[in-house]
Amino acid sequence: MPDHLHLLVELPGEGLSLPAWVGPFKSRTTLLAWAIGFQGRLWQRWFFDRILRREESIERVAEYIIHNPVRKGFVETWVEYPWSGLGPET
Image (cartoon, rainbow, N blue to C red; front, side, top):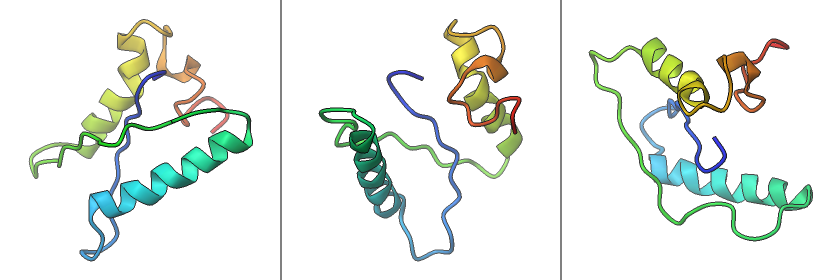
């Protein structure tokens, strides 16, 4: 999505919190974006998270994420969205 990012993340073990994971992720991706010419701030200071409930299907959540560009009208099918990471080349 052009203005936000959906991630489905499983943290390794019990020693790492989501904020402790998100901070380095934002730093690393900002440096990569700057290296390819992006200028300015990339991320907001805060983030929204939601923990999956035991009865929720990981597959259903993943489907929601990959179909978001279709619901927003950016593409006809999710495989057409170039930043899905799941396109026809995979």
